[in-house]
Image 1 (cartoon, rainbow, N blue to C red):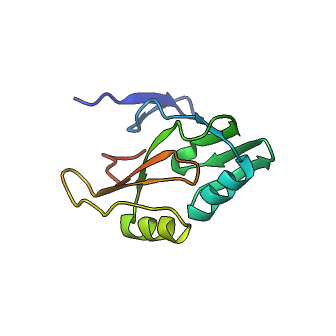
Image 2 (image 1 turned 90 degrees about the vertical axis):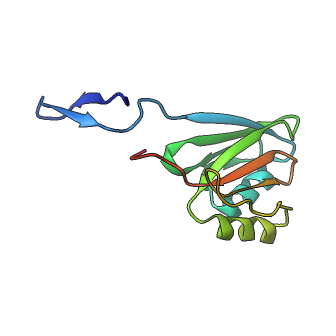
Length: 132
């Protein structure tokens, strides 16, 4: 049975909040070229929040921030969800990276790619089970 957390609202009354209690606030990723990797992720659909030569913050849906810092590249695995998996695969291919074919169903559509620095991207169709 799912748990429902209650949050006080501005009137002091309690209201049900069906969202899960936790979300991911920040993820860290190392990059050999922070600027180039920031440009790649901005081009394929992440929102650039802060950018400098040696530090960047990119925003994903739900407010999660991907923080890029200098370091050894190719160590991260990002498991991402998207609404339009076909369009996302096309955008990644247009951005110059390879991608596998899309496997359909069971329980969602998915494919694998990598960013220009060799980090693995696992892309799945959205499978949220309610408000997130």
